[in-house]
Each structure stands twice: as C-alpha cells, then as structure tokens.
Image (cartoon, rainbow, N blue to C red; front, side, top):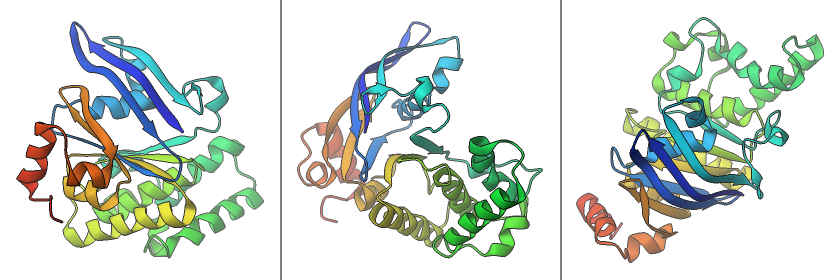
Length: 255
C-alpha cells in the first residue's frame, strides 16, 4: 500500500504541494485529477523521488510503501512501484530495438549480461503478454520511430509490469491518442487490474477516463487535495464547489 503523509513540496519560496495525504491500495485504481498547474505532475514525480534530485526543490513529509520509506534501500533492487510517463517515446532508447528495451528490467535484476537461458526465459515471458496487449511479435525488432503512439504506449505499460511491481503510476496514459487506441489502453488497464490484481495510480485531467476506470479519487487544486473518496460517490455527490464545477463542465454527472 502506498501512503503519502503530509507531503509538502517547495520550489524556492513557492509551495507547490501543501499537506498532501493520499492512500493507494493494492489491486485498486486510484485517480488523481487536477487542472494544468494544479501540482499533479509534481506529485507524480515526488512519488518517484525525482524531485529530490533537483536542488531547487525541497520535499517534506513521508512517502511510504507498507509503512516503510519508499526510497529506502530495501526497495532499491525490487521497486514496488513503476511509472509510465505521458510521452512513451521518452521511455525507450531510439537506438535500440523494442525487445532490447523490454529486456532491461530482467538485466537490472539478473545482471547486465544475460545468459542464453535467462534471455530465452525473458523473451518467452515477453511473448506471453503480446496477445493480451494486442501487439504483434514482429514489432519487437523495430525501433520507436517505426511504431505508432498507441503501440508504444502499450509497450511502455508492458515494460513497467515486467519489473514485477505491485503498483503502476500512469501519467496521462491516453493523451494525444485517437479514440480507438484510447479504448484499447483503457481495456488493457482494466484487464491487468481485474485479472492480475495489479494496482494503478492514474494521474489525469480527463474526468471521463477517471470515472470509467477508478475505484478511488483525489481532486487536486492549487497544490492541495480538496476532495477525495470513492470515485462513484464523488461523481454522484461532490461536496466541493470546484469538484461540482469540473463535473458539470464535462457533463459527467449522469454518465
């Protein structure tokens, strides 16, 4: 279980996130919704520890997995959380084949040089997912420039789960994809959640996507969580005027 306790993030004298409390459970899909500039990208990167690498940012509070600091050495070799970034092209090297990129999680766990038997097992594991992800095996030998955005986004999700995480962070996973591809990505996330009991944290500005996918929902505005709860209940009976305005603007209250 991911727990965030009283997270505050400052950039210089500005407070970007203020007193964030959030819980994301195994086997659940947790949504974080906010407008542009609400702080959701900062929250995403804070969970990954990226902000700690930037001197201008100062983080306070706790980010825990099962009660232990997420950045502790215990989780270094086998992180319980893996990210999928908004731009799938940034997830892969343009110089390597998709297969070589997909083998990286295995190399990290077993050593840079895989034995022939270890490589064969890793390849079989990758191939076992291709039908579920609606991806042809011939794509494995291609490079990023030869794939569509939808294909690459599905490979990005596959690469994340090959590391064996219990929770996957998704940053705007269907942005800039056409409607048919969006449907495929949404169906894939649902299947991985229901059949594999894989948890997700979905960061998005798209209320329609969140309503379709999420069990729990957090509304983020100006660096603060202003409303949270069961996703269906939040959509049916929003308590905050801001949340109500978001829902009415998208005409989602009766969907």
